[in-house]
Length: 441
Image 1: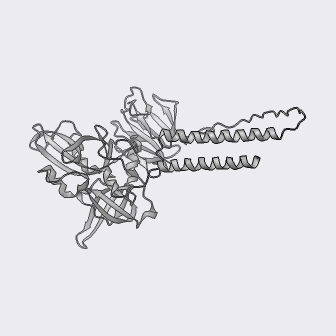
Image 2: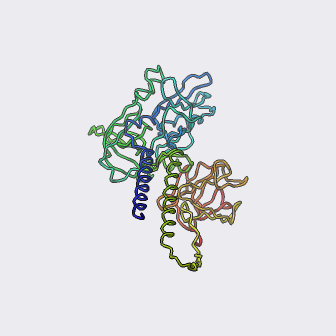
Image 3: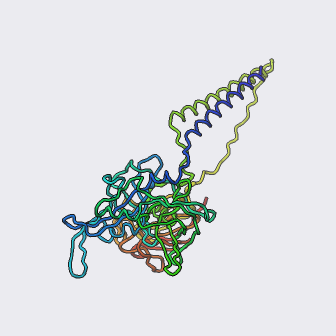
C-alpha cells in the first residue's frame, strides 16, 4: 500500500514540475536579430527657425530607443553632434544669434520621425560632448517603436559580426523637399566585424573600431550584434587621403549607460529581460505547489498512523532551541558612504548604492540627497555612483561648480573616479563631503 502511494506521489510531483517548466518556458523572451533592431530606431531632425518659421539651419541623424521591455519608450540615445545645433541655439528657448553684423531671433527644435508625416517633438535631457553621446526625451511615450536591449562590449567580441543601423545621408534632403521618408524600410543595415576595442588617450572614452561602413545619416544609430543587442552608438569615419584607408568608429554603449544611470533613466541589459509570465500562469503554478505540499502531508500523516504502537506512550517533547541569526545585509549596498562634514547636511551619512546613482541638489523631484535653499548648490548639482568596484563623481552642469579638495573644479558634466578619504565640495568649502566606508556589519 505504501509503495503504491509513493508511486502516485512521484507521478504527481513529476507532472506538476513538468507543467511548471513548460509554463515558464512559454513565458521567456526569445532573442531577436539585427533586422528586428530596426523596430527600435528612428530618424532625428534638428532644425533652427526664425520668428517667421523660416529654416535657418538644420541637420539629421539617427537614434534608438531605450527603456523597460513591454512598455512604450520615451527616451532615445543619439550622437551629441546630431543635436549640437539645437543646444547651441538655445535648447528650445528663443535665442538671439549674431554673425558679427546682424542679429536674428531663433528657436531650435528636435523632431523624431517614424514616417514621413508621423513625428513627435523631443528635448535633450543629458549629453557628453567628449563621448559624442546625447539622451533625448520625447514629449510622450510612443508605440511606433520599441526599446532595444543593451550589452556592453568585451574583448572576446573582437572579430565577431556586427551591424550598423540608421538612415542614409541622403535623407537630409527631406529638410528641403521631403524626397525621402523616415520609415522602417528606409533604414540601411551595414554589416561588418569588430576590429578592436579602444580607450581614447586623455579623455578615457571607450570606443569600437569596425570595418562596417558608417555614413553621415547613420550617426546616432545603434551598432548591434547578431541578436540585435546594442553594443555602441555609430559615430564617425576617419580616412587617410594618401592610402585611401578608412576606419569607422562607434562609441561604446558603456558611455551611454553612464548617462542613463546618472539621470535615473530606465533601460534593459542583455540577460535582464527575464520571463514574461502572466498572473493566471503564476496562479496555476501556485496551485501545483500547494497540491504537491498537501499530498506530501497526507502521506506522512498516514504513514505515522500505521507505525504507531498499540500501547499508549508519552510523547517526547523536544524543546525548541532559538538561534540568533544576523540581520540580512542590503544587497544594493556598495559598502561605501558619502559623509557630509560641513554645511546644511553636516553630520549625515548617505549610502552609495550599487544600482542607483546618488544625485545631490535642491530639486526634490530630480535628486535623492536634497538640500534646503542653500547658496551655491544647484537644483541638480552633482552625482556619485558605484560601478565595477569603483566610485565616480560627476558635476551635472552646476552653476557654482563641483570641486575636489583642496580646490580642483570639475568641468561641466566631467566625471572622475574618487576613493576612500577623497573630499569634495559644492560651490564652496562650506558644503563639504568625504568618501568613507560602511561602519560595522
